[in-house]
Amino acid sequence: MANPQVVIAMGSASDLPAMQPAADVLGDLGVAVEVRVVSAHRTPERALELARGAAGRGVKVLICGAGGAAHLAGVIAAHTTLPVIGVPLRRSLDGLDALLATVQMPPGVPVATVGIDAAENAGLLAAHILGTSDPAVQAKLATRREATARKVAADDDEAKKQRSRNL
Image (cartoon, rainbow, N blue to C red; front, side, top):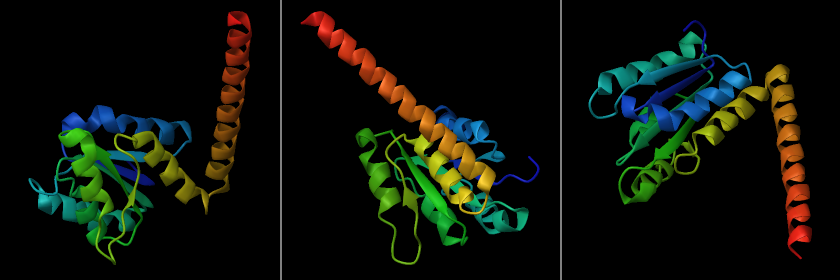
């Protein structure tokens, strides 16, 4: 893809369903995305090439999803100064192994980490980062937040009606 602002990388193609919400939310916000399958362990050269070349291609944020040992985000972060957001994916141990592997980075190699299988939040966090220098993205985020608040208020109104019917 030409001029992606965000790269979404995952350890294997089977991770795509779990990572799709990040691509979806960024697409809804008009953010150009590139999706890649690279493995920190099976294709380490590709992972390094992705990390080292991202800034030169105009990429602003990288989102990395991986399960199990979940080293992808850390390997990418070790080779770029761009923001990296890790998405621990549920595999074994209910995703706790991936969460700990992603969140426990050593000093000097930060990885912002969202919850287990929380790719949508990773996409939103990437958009928030982009929004610090892109007023159009910031405005779309504000509109999305307002729509979310309206939906919660409508759900609350409906719950109140249901409770009053059941009394």
